[in-house]
Image: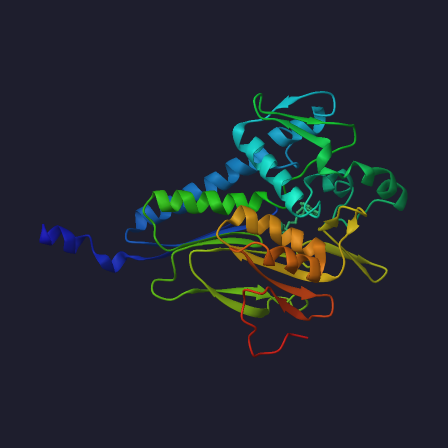
Length: 321
Ligand code: ADP
Ligand code: MG
């Protein structure tokens, strides 16, 4: 027995990491495992789960459940699986909480942007389509698990919440496998399981204007952290930065903030709230976060100034310029 324990060789315990391009971004996993094979299997299972969720929720895939809803829900009720239904429900709840700053119908206009090719809707399209940005036009039937849009022209997109769901599910899988220390990241959303074996994880918030540089590092354990930034997906035209976070009231990219970071217990919520705080701006955004005891926020405004929610201690160091 003793021999067996020894040959199970604790020396093979190590960090296992991998990253893959998916969901229009990068999904990365970093975990501690006592056993290399189990470690590699765990990595694979989380990537498979991310791919499965993407197949359900990507508007870029014609066959996804959400694409079917976008095609048919204005004509009548469309059945949705419990997972997608649940995430739409949570999205609408956050719309109520943020008074419409977070709104998955942003895509009624958002669909006309293509950040890779630098395309944007003309002012007439923005003007005519922005009336379809209104989460109250999405009706859910709990009993039948159906989605119905109250008018044509409405389109939903879970881009502001689905990555949080992916990392939350990824951590669930790892926890179920007995992993105790891990970090799962999808784009700007991360969920931390445990710590870095005796030390906190140091999570860097990017400098929004200096590629690859970290503006602020936050020590965290057992928490979710999400950042929404105007540098993630954007193009510039005539000195204006057109980026991927839409102000629902105008149908144009939200202004006033370069990045909004939110951390707290649940990555689905931090994901949606980082997008929300970005849209709401420093003052309204931090007031909202101040009303949520479990969540904190760090916002960098369009002049590079850094603002902290009330629950955070102001560090002595200065803001990045
Ligand atoms: P990232 O995708 O960089 O992690 P976010 O979490 O802020 O950043 O998500 C931005 C995405 O959220 C956009 O690409 C778009 O799909 C979606 N989105 C944009 N504006 C809104 C909004 N007002 N409400 C909800 N979702 C939005
Ligand atoms: Mg988000």
